[in-house]
Image (tube, rainbow, N blue to C red; front, side, top):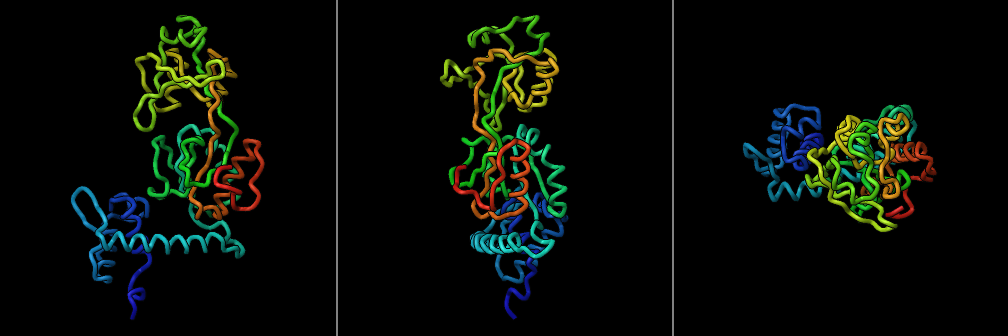
Length: 314
């Protein structure tokens, strides 16, 4: 009897998940099992292979040298199995599977949320997980199928597909704030105003990027409030607490209702489009292509023909 006859492939998947998450608890959450069940599966796998695969401490889990070697080999094997299942076009099976996305907050609000009803209608059997966070990550290392970021934040070794046109960043304030503090007429006037600081995913403060006579320029602005969440920033801005630096598309409703006003309009800055990006092995996932096309349709961009982008940077 070979080793493969005695090993449950679910145990192998659990092992890969533990190695990626570096935690029994996180792996259990992802797999929908208890930490105890995951721990028993790993003891069973190690007993059947006759090798120690994981180093366990009270705080962390790491793969042994043998475990690292096995994980690398299994990753290739599971990728091939996944690719075969994703491209299998028997009736009723073409869209089966799971998609895990890592998306920053503004893209989740502007792109993912509007696309969800149509995606669920077209792909009711697909399990879609959307994790919203602003920190920069390695989507492959952390187990995601795709991510959404601005084009210039996409790693060079990824397939990148634009989901929108260029995005416009503006400075905005409430009518009440402008009545109390006046309206800035030039970028230098911001030094005399309360500006809502923007905290990036790496915990650094963002220097506002503006258009200065056709040239890009970064500004350090004053202000006692620092916020890393767009919705909270918009609320603070509407409450008259300061001038905010925001995506124009993100405050379209507030601008239309007169709750916010753009200031220094000529200094608004055009940013790269939102891109969805993924490793080349994910290009043929039919449900991922469906999601991309739904978003592009809603943004009035042409659908992607076929399942593979024409090049790495579209």
